[in-house]
Length: 427
Image (tube, rainbow, N blue to C red; front, side):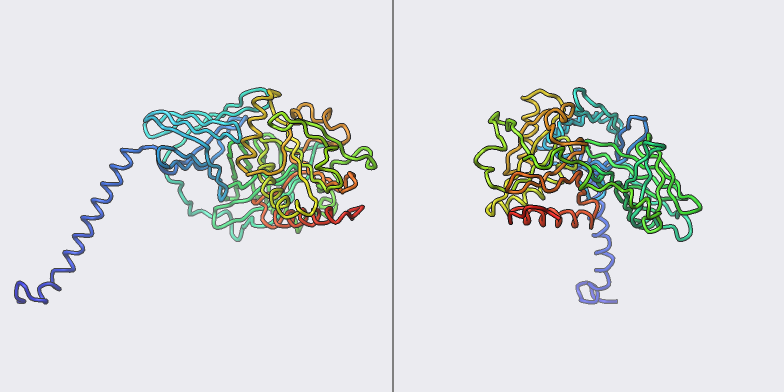
């Protein structure tokens, strides 16, 4: 037997003692976490759904955290994170404000669940979506879709039926049963959608404060996806590499969708900025300058994606003779409200170029009569030093599209560079 105070005695008992001490610390830690959760029952990650117009659930994550006295609520869709501008919780009611979308989440905590709604301005009415959230962990299924089934890659979607049918693009990434991807209509991508592909059934969803998107489809025996977009539009998808060349040729070209009625005329505009000061295309600041005009709205997610790229162009080429102007078409027609939304947009993206209040989404054709087939946001116009339009690009493929985003940014940089070099035409 080792002596009571000998090194041998220490080593004999130190292992069990350390184990017991570790267990005690773990128990104290868990108790501390439990007390913390009881003290602040709102912080953490919540599984959440909103109902779309058809009454189907659109899933996303809601992350809530404290930052000093402020409560921050983040709408999470894969890598996309939409953070609230303010928030509060009084022990019962949660309020989160998303100023840049003129939206608000209001919910009541009861029996461990949040029940409420997300509401925002939509045109001249208030759009209200029912919402609920809970802490239950999302379960990872052990099922697989089918032997060898993997949806990763580029797809072509036929959306709608008959004469109304259109061709869109899509891109998916799959790991096990988990899928992320995006849908890409001519107006630009839907952002990152997330979900699962199990037993041949695909379900992807996204809620970002503006749109509640849902894509449900089944993989057919011939490798196609057949389903519904947003519960309202039939969609049939096939892999891009297998698509008929005629279908690929039918994909809309973002550089030919919108045109000038009379290309030999200079593009003209004259609208107030959000402070009420009139800004016109004939102003001295634009004389003999290359110009990019973006037709946008503070309510448009793709316009938010485009703004940082336009900032890059302005910082890089403004000293070389480039100007940028945003023509905003807002929802309400209430000048005070719409001007404030433009200010919020400018602050969020640190916009240095002027944003003008050009009208509402209802009167865009009357406000810009020189353009045909107008109505996609954003629509970006590239104008030479001679005042003539060289290119018009509709939509914006954002970060969720991966290489398409990289390619579009490079194209925009090349166009800006070309314009400031005073080329008469852009090939």
